[in-house]
Image (cartoon, rainbow, N blue to C red):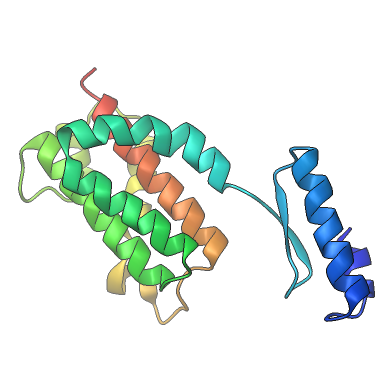
Length: 174
């Protein structure tokens, strides 16, 4: 399909009609793909998965314990959809995750490092500890290394990861 999209001259009625028809067919078939007409790419739509499996599960529980943190994650999600600075979105969302962990552990100095994770969440598998520490390394100067901010699809993945970790932390003592 991408080859066909690339073959049509951009900005023409044929191109626009084809993209519109293809989007309609994908939607009718409930195929979770969308078309980036500017780059002529077909991308998966993760927002519905994120909404159904994470946001709808996480938010009621998070709101009952940490209402401000729930609002911050919702705001990060809407900022991402609105195309705001993806680097800032990730940094803010990760700070929110850190505050959730501080609230759960009652440790105002909690950080996502191996020592704190082992102390407060020893039953979480070591590979998940490593993943969380690596996620922490993505923010600020530790993760920047002069690199451009994450792309939109990467930001969706990072927010998905942050929300999954928040669920894991909320479920830890259950």
